[in-house]
Image 1 (cartoon, rainbow, N blue to C red):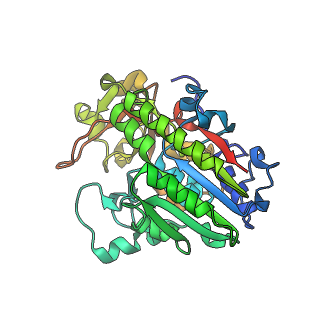
Image 2 (spheres, one colour):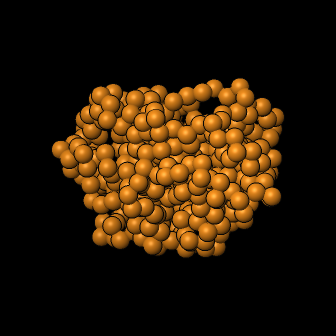
Image 3 (tube, rainbow, N blue to C red):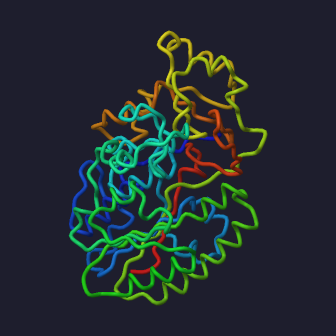
Length: 387
């Protein structure tokens, strides 16, 4: 890995983007200033303000496709949050604050409230055991302390999400008070965007989430033909959508970028029993930034052991220092965040990942990944489609 790219919470991150959009919608977010990239646009005067989040669409990808419609409408670049992953970033889009406040610190997290490693977006335990239906409904309110942003906006709020997730407990909790619409395909996604943004009876804020770039990169790799074909279709549909807008500001960005992960650069913890035997929980966080909960008697020894075993493919950092150095956001830090980042972070270098597998857990291979601090993962585009 080259020089680390850390979040710029002083004005250049997706958190600051949300501060700008909230301000345009009549609400001020404490602790994070608006981004200067949008200061001159007069967003508050638009009848419709639309935020489109293209999961995994990093700035690096657009820079390699400069003739695309989306690349031609770039107005700047932002950083994601740390870790650069959907769970942390989407919660930022729903709350307007960083992981230091909202407490979503990775796809897999150890939650003391549930006494298990849990994946909050799909709402399931990592070990596959089922939670009661009553508990599943209450989980987001128990796990996340940050205020939900959309209920504070002085505009009608509409949310557009894939049909299979729009009624999840996570979405229902964070989108309370908003109208939620589901879609089944890219064509339907853009058609519904056109419909929602084409009405001007009252000022609206529209949040629209599209996951397929991320999903296809995971499955086929960032530079695959499948991803390129999908990107071409996305550009053609967005060009048509943009040309039909009136009195509408459309901001398009991403939650993170992607980096290809070669098969030979995957560390399987099963082949490192000395490290595995130090842990009290399965690895949490991300394959690119894994949280280690370490047995008390191994706390002092663990960094040296990790360095010996993992060599140049990972750096072992004390989680408290990573937090105090502002990777997760500015103070004040939530106690929940401190608890959910373990004792150490294994920050994977270059294009390496680390993974463990629980008994009965379905194994999978991801050709592209995210969650780390390379520029490919951390930098996301700021695109202005219309204002």
